[in-house]
Amino acid sequence: MPTLIKIAILAIFYIIFTSFSMMLTGKNEFLSSFKANNYTNNTFYIYLAGALILALGARLVYIAINYNLFTDHKYIANAASVTAAITALSYIGVLICNHFYLGEPITNKMIIGFALISIGCFVCLS
Figure 1 (cartoon, helix red, strand yellow):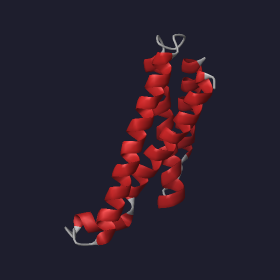
Figure 2: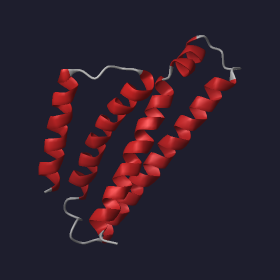
Figure 3: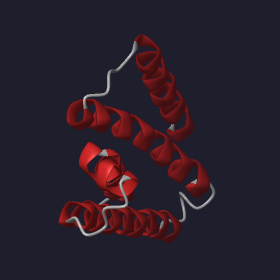
Figure 4: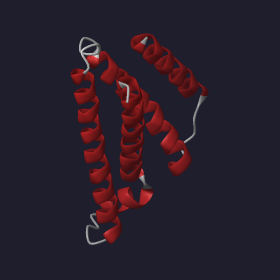
């Protein structure tokens, strides 16, 4: 499989893992049990465990992205730029995930930001 296709697939997984990990720690059920010092509530531990597993998965995918970039000699010089672009794209994923699962609004400023990040990533990766 070509390296760019592997990177694209891994980037999708990275964005999904990062977005859902952050979404779990932003849920009202998690935050209310954290604020009330109610650590005996199972909801707290379920959300925390899920967020930690997804965050670990995101880090492992990030390592896999770097590994694939460094094993293909064409991409070694641009590896830092590619991973920075993927991280920037994950911000968009986090905000979209928060919109659908936490009910946070997406404003016009955010849409402009999405466009700027996407254009920047496209320029960086081309």
